[in-house]
Image (cartoon, rainbow, N blue to C red; front, side, top):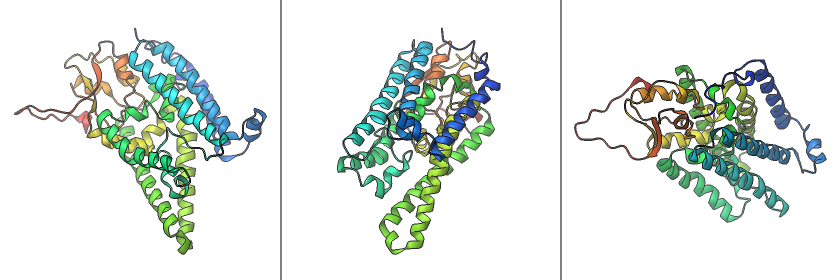
Length: 356
């Protein structure tokens, strides 16, 4: 029996009541202190850590470990969820926390091996990435521009967004109790499509501007000043405010994937690849009983039930392949698959309103 179906909205902190607003306020205050003040540096040094960012990395990792244990208590009866959770937590511990510290101890510039451009936008800034050893430079370029698009085509964006990325990892572990709060309305979907691709365009243009400044900035001081402003404001608005302050601070009010759904440029690129790739969530024909569990627990705000009732595969760019819709379905209607579309000769191609 799937856990959580009966008690999701009973807890005040899970149903946008006063405790949820209080928790959101605490999270927002913490991220504002983290990004825009030095108030946490004394706390970090008092704990024997070098700075506030190491403290944040420690808290983030502990939150994922504890949240992963809680998640597995509720949903560990699913093999897919067990493996996925263990992998994403393991990636956070090893590649996003331990290795950067080891590199710093060895006197090298830290590098987060589980983050790539454009999510970690500075990893294609020449002035940043070219300070790393050649193999890391190669790793960054091939991962961002070659390996990830190919993996997205064959496996969908889930290979990264639900199995590797720390943003998605925190959402699916410590934030899992809030996944049902994502807005499933058509209005939210329309806003999502505008916002996420707008951020992607800004990310690409910002990278180009910074790269040009690296190449010609010494001879053009005015352009260099402009490039510096672009880099600063992108980091402030997108990297700090959207990804951190709002991305996590709004968990108790808007669900756990606010950043991933509305602003993440990596999710935008992988979502476009996914639309033309092999990954889809298939629905057994005429089996859906319209219980709505799949839609309720979709953290990306997809009305999965509408697809299942229309006997359509779910192939939305937003889908991160977390698998919770299939896990929560009481009749086993949904299945995550990687397969090409095949049309039989003379078969009509049907288009439904849910896919427009």
